[in-house]
Image (tube, rainbow, N blue to C red; front, top):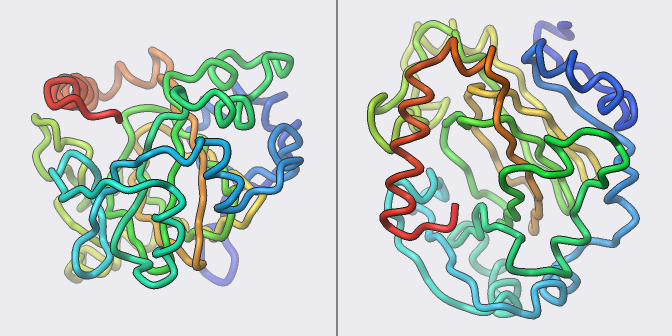
Amino acid sequence: MTQNGKIKPLKIDWISFVQQFNRFSRANQPIIITELDFINAYQWDGENLSELMDNATLTLMESQSDGTFSGRSDNPKTSMMRMSDYLSIIEQYPTRYQYAGIRVDPYPKLAEQVRIPESYGITSLSKPCETNIWVGGKGCITRIHFDQVENLNVQLKGRKKFFLIPPNVKGMRARSPFSFQGHLSHYNLIDSIPSPEKQTIMQQCIEVTLHQGEAIYIPFCWWHEVHYIDDLNINVNYWWFAGRKKTITKPRVLLSSTLTSMDRKFRSLNL
């Protein structure tokens, strides 16, 4: 669907999404999801998040000077501090640190709050391969990359802007396809893509602003760049493995995923 010359994703409620989960997964198109009754009952803010994590000591990823961040695979500088201290400085230094992709498993109270009930009948969602929390201040940017898995990203606090690019768009390619950085684009940011490639890519790019209480389904292998909009932004995302029919068509992604996993285990990265 297009609106004002821009591609707009389908927008549906949560119950419709889970009822038609397999069909949407096969279609491999981003979807905006509303009315998330399994998670919206909780009042999310920094204080409550800190409490759910028992004010744990965190390993924070330091962003580049321009606020961009490309993940642990790029060996970023790190800092250690308690969640309460991080939240107290995020307003003063909004783009300096990101609490990026940390598993909820070690924090039982937090894990319980973000758990998707089995009663929905979708094992991929109720038992994902990973559930992660993301926190960042206004101006943080996650550089272009794709996930080697399916992704449901839920906005708990603030807003984020997603730029989504289909996996088969001409001009998009991995930085180093056969390495642990195989999921990173050879372009850092959309703004760095030269013309005329940028014009071709942007014709198929989907721009989405995700609001608190909404979720976005990002299919396997879709490129995405993410901008943090508000002073405090909190997300939880659920990763699950794509079906055999999806993965078998992309052997490069399978190799990249394997190498990435091996590298993270070797360096003991919790991601």
